Length: 129
Image 1 (cartoon, rainbow, N blue to C red):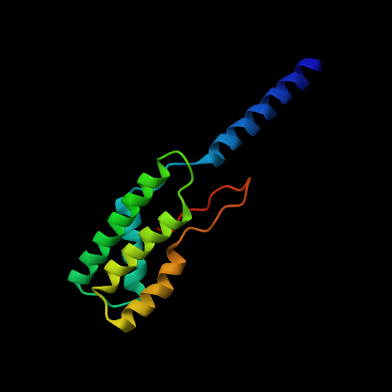
Image 2: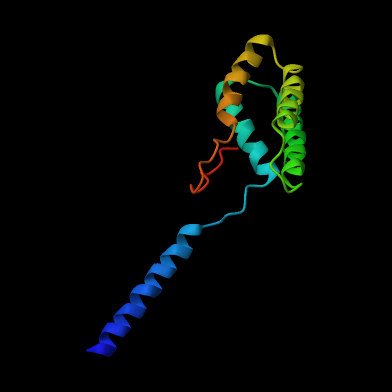
């Protein structure tokens, strides 16, 4: 009876441990290329853009994500003013290739592209980039 209880306890512990590791999933963030591709897809759903506009937006977001990643890799949380400057630079680059009407639509979309802030103890949601 005791050995059966011990065996059952070991099995339960193994199942709990296995399920805990299985829920962790892939914690690697998407590559910059994937994030840019996701952004382009979301923009194209709302705004009609031609190939040259698409290339310019692709470049603007690639530069933005690269610089933002460099800021995050410094070890500390990036300064808000630095990140806002990077966003302004990106948006200015996008503004140069879009009409005023399309740029205003882009600004509405760009609010949805930003990752949501995490609350402490919460698992990060899948980023939509």
